[in-house]
Length: 73
Image (cartoon, rainbow, N blue to C red; front, side, top):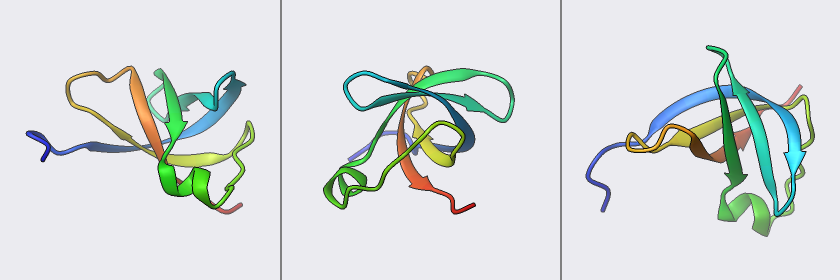
């Protein structure tokens, strides 16, 4: 169980990094490193630069996140 709830934010994928990680720029201008969740990897949901995504950030470390949803264009 998590002690604190996750922070849900939206952003745009800027760059695809190695090891299935992405550089995501949030709407407020900050950039974080994010990786797709297990279900996104399981069902081969592709993420490319320019996609709008929803991320879950831990309140303890706001520089890393998990991509939970890719928005349709």
